[in-house]
Length: 172
Image 1 (cartoon, rainbow, N blue to C red):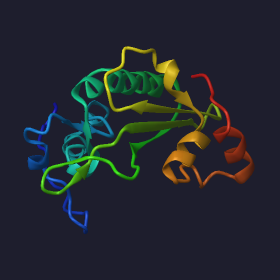
Image 2 (tube, helix red, strand yellow):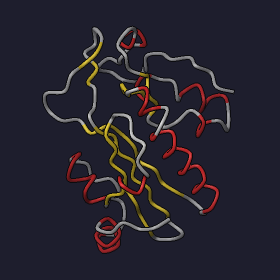
Image 3 (cartoon, one colour):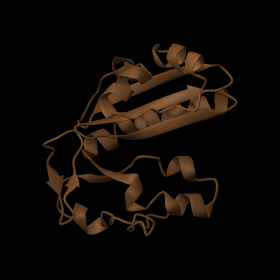
């Protein structure tokens, strides 16, 4: 069952956002790794409520298109042998913030998905706002996400495989 035990993350040595940062902010404490995807056991569910797994999300985004994408990924998990999912905010300069901890409000979020068995990847970049669009509008290559974030998401792959898969948008 969902625990809803939002709390600071004690493992973040630089300090963590607080649930209080979100009070009267107009933003949801949006999960990066969804609580529903962590329903295998109590520990995983509870840990999904650390504030290090939260980011300010527009309520219509969080409960709308982001929820659709999370549901789609859970469907894919049941169809494929193993998936790796990397998710996060795209942090840029001059972002607005909320709370006493000055939690940045991302304008965009990403998800990068890699199927090992199928040898394919797909990415999504979605604006942190209400959208009634089809998820296909937000499909991007992993290279696109890496260029926007500065991260090398699947660096453990052999370079030849990484280069090929990250430059294409696979169909799942």
